[in-house]
Length: 54
Image 1 (cartoon, rainbow, N blue to C red):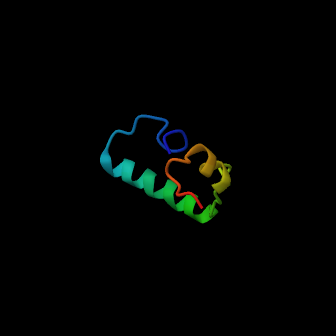
Image 2 (cartoon, rainbow, N blue to C red):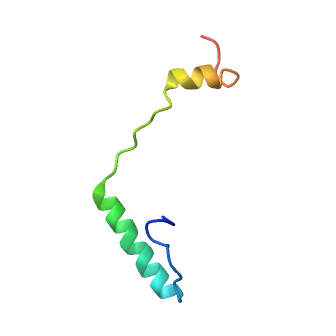
């Protein structure tokens, strides 16, 4: 958000709220997907102390 929306000085709170609402609407309209690269198997290896043994 900081790089996409708040990359400049905004002088007042009303303008900030308007900018943030517009940014949020644009992001929500895109319906972006999350591409997870850290799999459950990776987590079981890396965080084995948190996972029960099966």
